[in-house]
View 1 (tube, one colour):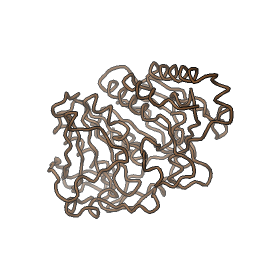
View 2 (view 1 turned 90 degrees about the vertical axis):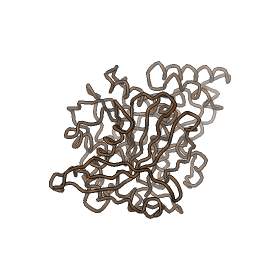
View 3 (view 1 turned 45 degrees about the vertical axis):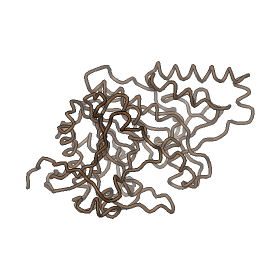
View 4 (view 1 turned 120 degrees about the horizontal axis):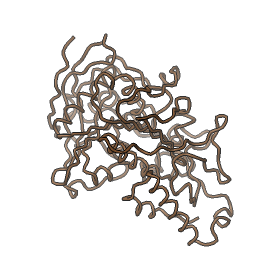
Length: 428
């Protein structure tokens, strides 16, 4: 078989510019002393199945890192998500402020065939046509080629290895959300024991199964794998820290993580966030109306928990204190246990569930579209519930502030985010 050769990085220019947009504007990188560069990353990668050997590839990677600002020495490598039929970086959206204030370099890797070549969407938004990079902008990306998802894990490893050398990173963390989390589950179970490269993993919103190993010349069929797969927990002999962060909306329904749920271990923490959906208003912002959902999408505070998870993971991977443990969400006979307002009990608590002015739910109403199901919903409090809980607005503010401080003390919200959380006070 051909040897695995080191990856070369060549800046990508021309065409329509970097094809990695977000519904929410990120921080001003230039003002923060950061740079943003897109590279064509070329080399060879090994398949997970040794019988398939190795193959050449040329994919893309977007690198955002401090230049004049202080750098931490940590590189966070996100497996870009292709569920919509085009590359997206949901964890960059959640984590950008934390990455910039900590000085962690970030890289988004187009590891999968669908992101580079094909535009098949696992979850589509009606009226929105998406496609892979080579079709989207042939001038900029026309020379890219992907040998198929049999090599996706190898591509992710080899590109991350090259980026660590390029950035001088001393700690390298792998992160991924939704479909990417399925693939990272496979990575932790089957690839990491062989490669021993990453120092920690943040697996965000996975489902019950691990992603299939993939085939030559095509992308994975995640829906088929989920229909025929077996619930797959992470291996129990981890040698680097792993945080699995699940929203309420990930436990049942479409994602159905519950059959793969597992307890914490020496190097594993599982956080289940009450009142959070698989995706939410923080991700979609002003484009919420394009989803066509009957109810307002979830307005939970998952973003702050994701930032806290990365902070803990980085410290833990560097030999510091482990991340805190969290109680699981309460589920009895396959259904959530909810309070009198309809808010789930247990799990990681944020102020919007412990001092509620509305009811944030991880699931959409029955009969909702697949995309709306992932975005959950936000419902008004039952009539008179606010008045029964708080005699005055000052009482509500005091309760919300106390819930914020409790979340900070527990380690599930960062002290640096306290002001932002308090800025989300609502009218009960």
